[in-house]
Amino acid sequence: MFEELAEKARIALYDKYSLGDLVVPWRRPQERAHGDAATTVALQLAKNLKKKPQEVAQVLCDALKQCASVEKAEVAGAGYVNVWLTPEALIRELQTTETACAQWPTRKGEGPVIIDYSQPNIAKPLGVHHILSTVVGQCLCNVHRHLGYEVIGWNYIGDWGTQFGKLAVAWEKWGKGKPVSEHSLDELLELYVRFHAEAEKDKTLDEAARAAFLKLEQGDKNLRSFWEGVVQVTKASLSAIYERLHVRFDLDIGESFYEDKMQPILEEGKKKSVFVKGEEGSLIVMFKEEEKLPPFLVQKGDGATLYATRDLAQIRYRIDTYHPQAILYVVDVAQQLYFQQLFKTVSRLDWKLPLLEHVVFGRMRFKEKAMSTRKGTVLKLEHVLDEAVTRAREAIAEHRDSIQTDDENALAEMMGTGALVYGILSQNRKMDLIFDWEKVLALEGNSAPYLQYTHARACSVLRKAGSKDAPSLRNVDVFTDYVFTEHERSLIGMLLQFADALEEARAQRMPHTLANYLYGLCQEFNSFYNVEPILKAEGATKALRLFLTSLTARVLKTGAFLLTLRVPERM
Ligand code: ARG
Image (tube, rainbow, N blue to C red):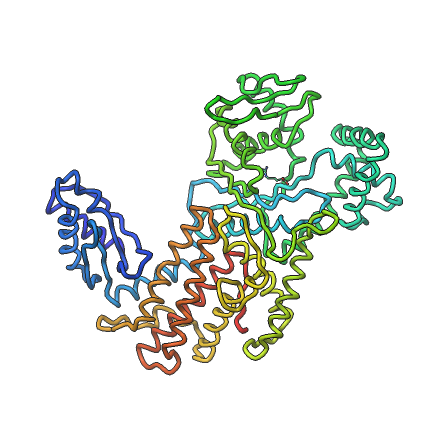
């Protein structure tokens, strides 16, 4: 549609001002009052043409009025051009929304987008804070993939470090001879906690742990198989939670993988004088004064490598192996400085780099209670998920009259986990998050249950209409003299924004823009539903309204899936 407008505008500018081959950019205004398409091109051209912007805009409007698809074209404000399309053109334009509900064709030759997310540390259960990186990352994977990007979703697990020495010692001493693989994750955590308590009293323990980790690094067989056991136990326990959250990774290559890939980088950095001697024989990166970054430690004085060294090796490995167009790190704000140092360091190494981006998110706070349990240990994500489902079950019981379901448990799981996840993804990730159980589980308002309920409502209309196939655009007779009701018009306007909302969420890495869009669509659909008869309408009107209902359901379902949610057919 915009192509037709762009072409008309191009010709007009050529005829009037002899401007050659201008691509006139059109966008869909956010405000309904500004029509269906708008351009600022007159404002941009006026100065060079030595004309008033309004005058240039008027030239465009006069030309655009001749397009068959244009109902009205107006100059607004300082020189904007606003265009209203005919009902026929608008209905045809809904094709783009239908298309946007299906996976887009794969983009060729661009290289994958690597998304590094979730990244839990081994031997510990997932804490509630892990949900942030996990669902933001999964949503970004889903949206990119949907829009045709090749994606590598990467769980960069923290499976290496001195903590394994401690755990090995604790297991030897207090593990009662039970093989690691038979320990639960909670038992492993207990051993780890006990190590810290006992090490306060017995100083030899730390020494023993260091020795054990050194042996592990040197490839000791027993320690190696102990470590493998720990990784196995942890992964098994993680996968149950990931499944509940509809989270799926392509790779879970963790920190240990880079053990033998760091030395060449350290050599390279020294040779290029990017890594210089710091205190006590350590290696550091010094930044320029105007960069205002503290020195970056890449190797300790005793030769030990660090988290940073592994990330350097990892970037090299990812570039060499996958030739990505971008690497996104979904990691909390505490590591902001770290990523600045890391990215500056690799650019100093003069590598040919993909886009490197730290997709930052703030901290999460519960409105009613602290995030930590009394002992100061973190609240387990599993428990929070269970609590969400319990609360959802209560909400279902409370609304028994208005909620219908044949499987209450499945609905509670869908609603509870959905509420938790949506409660996070509907907020601007850059801000601290406030989590309010009451709000996220409410059936009204910007919540998962509201979205789920609206989807089910649309499905129920379609069921009652009894058509076997979902009404598609093909069922709607395109008519020129149709006059939309106000609610039809608003709903169409909202539906037409879906593709843009997806692209915006992707480009800005902002799941909440998609969530907010879906919320707006739910509101628009519900107003339409409350006012306009659908099943009792007749002829062309009925066909159109059923189609709008069906398209709303498809957009809600697609959008919800991209946010990692599920929606019921009945509720
Ligand atoms: N596992 C790390 C942590 O718990 C986060 C890893 C983030 N990803 C990365 N490539 N550094 O702090």
